[in-house]
Image 1 (cartoon, helix red, strand yellow):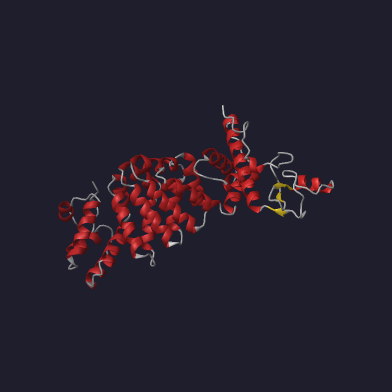
Image 2 (tube, one colour):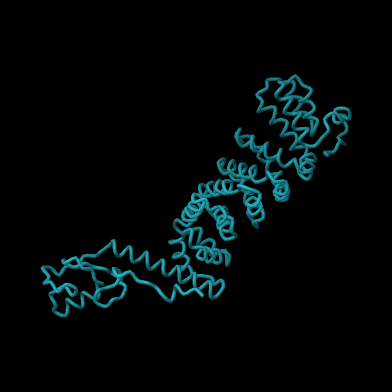
Length: 368
């Protein structure tokens, strides 16, 4: 049974020498001894002109606030309150904290305060109003990121994969500013170090969906960070299927269709499409989207910096897999032809069969 809330050791320097209670407003006399303001003031108002602890005659009755001690006492009081809330959680299961309690928990959030984090998550889940409260709280997201950074820097990856931490990460993605979202996505990528960690991240309810949404945000840095994360997490085949289910392929088509998409984002989008096409579900979805196939072919041609105008015009006027065939058979650079051939293979199409059955009027060849 947790008993930290029953037996609390108070540092002796925090106690007033007169009443032995924890000082609320520590002030020092000219003798250097510190007392609680209310206690020493009553002593002096009673006509005494000596220091109660040393009995020295006071040359001055001025009371100087001991700011350093006051700060230390406040930190200690907050930590005690945090421990008491944690102990309450153990005894009474999950109890939704008040807003003032949440402020206290966030103020002293650290890697060892796991039950405090549980309370914060419980508070966030209670209502939309509570989530708004957390989002507007000063330094909440920076405290969370500090917490996660400390966990990772201490090579404590496993705690970050616990449900509570992933719930906090989801909250940052949903409510945080762009900078905190970017840093959170990068942190997620850095802790996705093996199959187990990737699976936990992929199976966290709402997390993948929120990251897919980020591909529509206007911040290129956030989009690029999210694409890098997806490339890292989709190495295991079963996670490719999970990501495909969240309709990420249409979002990649959207990115490739935007005129201002950066080269880096374009390359990452193509890399991710290649990864997703390893699964039949991904291949079929890409194959049946003639607009996406067209954008891929046109992007390959553009990225290659080719100057073959006829090839460009032919690609622009054709549809679906025809674009890739035209690229393969054109006078484009060998690099472009190779990339196109590789893309056809990636999509699961038998290249020789594709050529032998090619007819501009029909597109019945299906991916394997």
